[in-house]
Length: 105
Image (tube, rainbow, N blue to C red):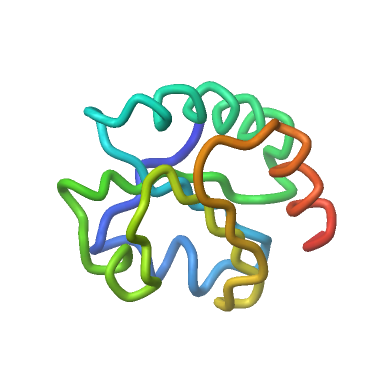
């Protein structure tokens, strides 16, 4: 299950992680976000122990969405060592996300 990441936990969960981190910026009212959600959950299960997979609700937690220039949702960012190494905006096939994680491992 994907972690719920908040403005308060973002630094510890994402920026200080020793594993690659996938962050799905989404909102409950966003139709395309509801399409990406199940893919992110699958990826979370498949990469358990190898990568951290989480979600940020941009309506409730805007600090890091603003910091990383998230203007459209869904936006999925992949971090390694606290730096963005991949950015996907909109709905993408699962392979796009898994390829990004594999490249970070």
